[in-house]
Image 1 (cartoon, rainbow, N blue to C red):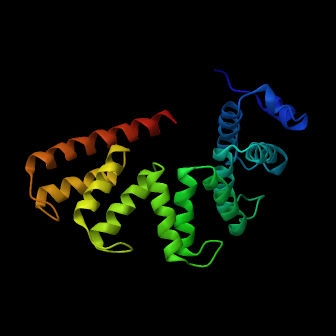
Image 2: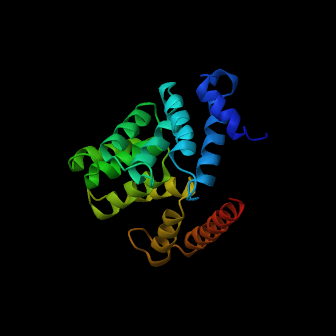
Image 3: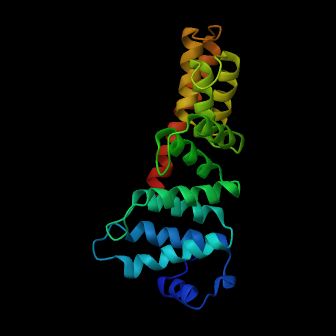
Length: 217
């Protein structure tokens, strides 16, 4: 499918013609142009602001990836757009309310470190668990670490291994590497060279797949 060109995207926002395309296509092409152009010093609010407006409109329509992207945008800021942590938190909350696992994980980070809000370890841990249950590999990895170390959760190596395995199945290289080392050296689990070899092989495959994706970007 060809990209919607910049002038057409500008017309979409100017004429409120969002029904002409799917939310997915509008978001994908908007993100493509924004990411491609934002590093160029001659593109500022006049051009890139159009894409931000599209994100906002898609967010108003309840499209959670756009809300999540706005959360990231207002966290990082741009040379023409100041960071606003409180607004970033708000967008992530809206995306999380719509079931966005990535936004749920960001809320864990925000509440754990006090970004745009007060530090609240209990709320942070709750958001991490919600993110893990919603399919965030990073949150699943964290759950494994919580149970392995007894940090935020009672220490329970069986639960730790289960969460690490869920993260590994979702493609989390750190979780796969951790499981391989645990079985290699018998740390928290019975030593099992065969399982260690299996996880090590999977780790290499995941790293290679990650590098291929980076090359394709």
